[in-house]
Amino acid sequence: MPKVLVSDPIDQVGLDIISQVAQVDVKTGLPAEELVKIIPEYDALMIRSGTRVTKEIIEAGTQLKIIGRAGVGVDNVDVPAATRQGIVVVNSPQGNTIAAAEHAIAMMLALSRHIPEANVSVKSGQWNRKQFIGVEVYKKTLGIVGLGKIGSHVASAAKAMGMKLLAYDPFISQDRAEQLGCRLVDLDLLIRESDYISLHMPKTEETYHLINAQALAQMKPTARIINCARGGIVDEVALAEALKNDQIAGAAVDVYENEPLEENSPLRELGQKVILTPHLGASTEEAQVNVAIDVAEQIRDVLLGLPARSAVNIPGLYPDALEQLKPYLQLAETLGNLVSQLVGGRVDFLDIRLQGDLANRDSKPVVVAALKGLLSQALRERVNYVNATIEAKERGIRVIETRDASVCDYTGSLHLEAKGSLGTHSVTGALLGDREIRVTNIDDFPINVPPTRYMLFTLHRDMPGIIGKIGSLLGSFNVNIASMQVGRKIVRGEAVMVLSLDDPLPDGLLSEIMKVAGIRDAYTVTL
Ligand SMILES: NC(=O)C1=CN([C@@H]2O[C@H](COP(=O)(O)OP(=O)(O)OC[C@H]3O[C@@H](n4cnc5c(N)ncnc54)[C@H](O)[C@@H]3O)[C@@H](O)[C@H]2O)C=CC1
Ligand SMILES: O=C(O)CCC(=O)C(=O)O
Image (cartoon, rainbow, N blue to C red; front, side, top):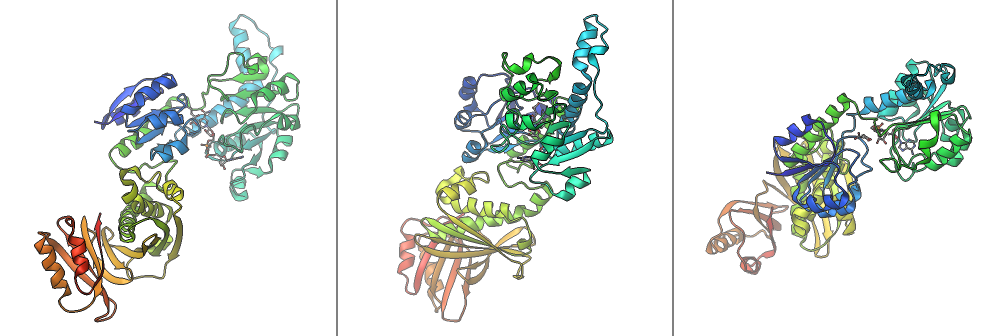
C-alpha cells in the first residue's frame, strides 16, 4: 500500500479520502531535517502553508509521486525541483477563495473601526468610546491589486458596500475589470488614489517587495493597506516605518515574509494602526473541508495512476477535456516512442503535426505526451508528464508544432517526424472509433496497424518471395508472427513491412534479416 505523509493540519474528510488507497501518517510541525530523514518512505506529501518543501526534501523523496498543497499558493514548494524530479504538484485553486476574500474584507472593516483594540479595551473593564472613532468605507476608493479569483470576490463585496473600485492586474482585460465594476489603472495611479489597497496577487519575482518604501510614500496619509495575499509582497520594515511616521493610516496583515512572524518584528509594536492575524485567510471550516477534499482526491487519483485535475507543473486540463483527450495522449505517447526507436540514436528535432479535428484542440498535453514517448527509451520510468518538456529542452531537442485541420482521412490524426544522429523517420497515427490506436503511415508509406508490444519494420524492394523469406527466418528462430502488413507507394517499388510479433526478436536475427536480398533496412520496436 502506498504511504502518504500529511505534514500540516488537514481536515479529517481529506484524510478519509486518501485512506481509501493509502496508509496516511499525520506528522505535523516536523523540523526540516526530520522531514528529509523520513520522506524517502513516502509516495505522497500533503501540506498547507506550514511546511516549506525545499529542494533538499524533494531530492530525498525518491518515491514521491505527488505533493498536494491544500490551498492556492505553492510558493512554499520548490516547484522547479519537483518538476525536474517528475513529481506532480497540485493545489486547490478555488477551495478557499471565499474565505480569503472575506478575511480581507473583515480586515478592512476591523481596521476602519478599531474593532480588535475596542474589544480588548471593553474586556479589560474600560468604556472608552472616544478613543475608537473610526472611518466609513462607503464611497471610499478601494484599489485591488490582482483581480483574480479572490480579488474579484473582494471587488463584488466592496461594490455592494458602496466603494469605488480601482484595479491593477497586468494580465486581465479591461472588459473583465469593467464587468466587476473596477476601473483598470496602472499601479502608480492606484497607489496614489486609493483609500484602501488590498493585495491579491501571487508572490513572484515581480511582486516581491512591490509595496516598498517608495510605493508607501506615494500613498495618501489617510490610506490603509491590507495584505492577505503573501508575505514578501510588502516590505515589512518599510511598512513599519511608514506607519510609525504617519505616512499612511493603517495596515492589516495576514501573511509575512517569515512565518511565524518573528518575535521582534517592528510590526508588533505599532498599536491600533496595525492588525495582525496569523495567516488565517483560508481558516474557515468550509474552506478547510473544500481544500482537503480537493487535494485528497487528486492524491488518491495520482496514486491510482489517474491524472490530477489541478496540477501546477503539468499542462492543466479540465477533467472533461482530459477525458476526451486521453486517447490522443496515448496515441501521441505511442507514436513518440515508435519514432524514437526508428531513428535509433539521439533525436535532435521533432516536428509534431496535429491534423484534422485534433488541430483545433489544446495541443500542449499532446506535445508533452509525444515527448514523454520520445524520451522513454532513454529515460525509461524517469520521464513522465511532469518532466518530459524540461528533459527534452535540456537534451537540446527542438520541437516544432504545426496544425493542419484540412487532413480528413480520420477524425483526428497526429504526424511525428524526428531527425536524429542516425537519420530521419516519420510516423502517423489516428484513433479508430475514438479509442483504438492505429499507425497509419510510416516514412510516407501508408499502412494500418495497431501498435503491439513487439514489432518488426522493414524497408524493402516490393518483389515476389521476400515476405515468405522473412516469415521462414522468423519461424526458424521460433518467433511467432501475430499479424503482418505491407505498405507501398508503387508496385515493385519500395515498400514497408510491419510485423506484430508474439515474442521479442532474439539476438542475431535482425542481422540475418538484413542479409535477405531486397531488404534495405530493418528495425525492431518494443512498445
Ligand atoms: N491569506 C491566505 O490564507 C490566503 C492567501 N491566498 C493568496 O492570495 C493570492 C491570490 O489568490 P487567487 O485569487 O486565488 O489567485 P488567482 O491566480 O486567481 O489571482 C491572482 C491574480 O494576480 C494577478 N497578478 C499576477 N501577477 C501580478 C502582478 N505583478 N501585479 C498584479 N497582479 C498580478 C493575476 O493576473 C491574477 O489575476 C495568492 O497569492 C494566494 O496564495 C490565497 C488563499 C488564502
Ligand atoms: O493553508 C492555509 O491556511 C493557507 C492558505 C493559503 O495561503 C493559500 O491557499 O494560498
